Image 1 (cartoon, rainbow, N blue to C red):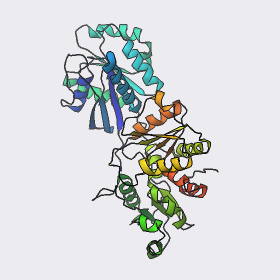
Image 2 (cartoon, rainbow, N blue to C red; image 1 turned 60 degrees about the horizontal axis):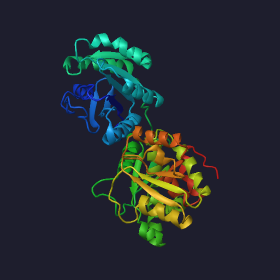
Image 3 (tube, rainbow, N blue to C red; image 1 turned 180 degrees about the horizontal axis):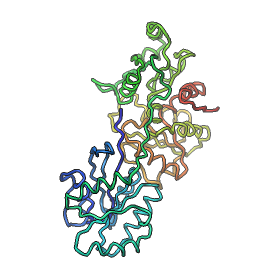
Image 4 (cartoon, helix red, strand yellow; image 1 turned 90 degrees about the vertical axis):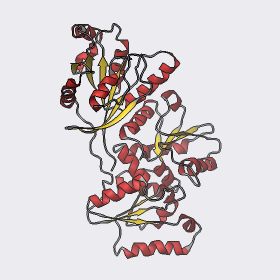
Length: 419
């Protein structure tokens, strides 16, 4: 399974001591510490286990007050990090005079409904005396718990950890990968293994499904469909599939298929067996149960007009060859049915800024198996904020086969897609 981590971000001005806080928590020189403003050029990330809290991901962000074009780029990255964090540690040097930057971070974090803890980093002997003046200039601080420390003093590490544990409430509720799973039932994993499949291992969704089914006392059975033969109408491939099902001696409870095989599986699956796809499974899991929103988004396709733009979003950077879903199969389908619709792509873990997003009629997202729930939820929040609908590879590829196929893959999740 994916390791669910709470994300803790360290934010503040340049030279406020953010990197020192990071190094204190990790107990090593994770981040470079130097009096030169802007030393942290990009976000430093560390994975750690905190006793009493579990696995966490720490973000040491760049100073939010750096000016110029480079500063603008850094602030954009810091804002992206802020959207992903569950807990914001706002580091303040009380001996500075202008707290506009801290006010902006506070306002943004509160707008995003982030949990916020304030750390007053005491550099000099008069720093403690300055705290009341800071609180007067930043009235929003009264709503958040505060702690004073010296970030370069390792003796403050345990008090800081206790402070975090006492005031942070994790919102990472446990998600079931396959909530419809039943003990002692068979579940077929249809894995075609095309030219993009890496040797020696399953893809993450396939491995996760197999582990989850086994852990929950059911029986995963893998099957490799020959897509080439099946699509050519080779009768022997259909017989091989039916023989495989018959050899189980009882019906499987459900079939989980590679989405690109939906053109076959929606008719090959027995009527009394549930069907869904790995991509749908993953987007529901990583989005923490928001599959219905991705199902709603597909309705936009019936209203497409010439000149509309669709953004296809793939979170990983795998080598794209042959009949790649995101760059070949979905774009080709769109071009066949809506030749005047513009298709664009966004690859990797960085997402586009809001001013670009609002130009799209629809966003089609992959299963999200290579990004965290926090990152995907930040994307969903951005799309919701600009009113752009979104769907998913598995939902789209099922919709391509008609309303019955879409209804088929959503039924196990208790979702009624309507017409």
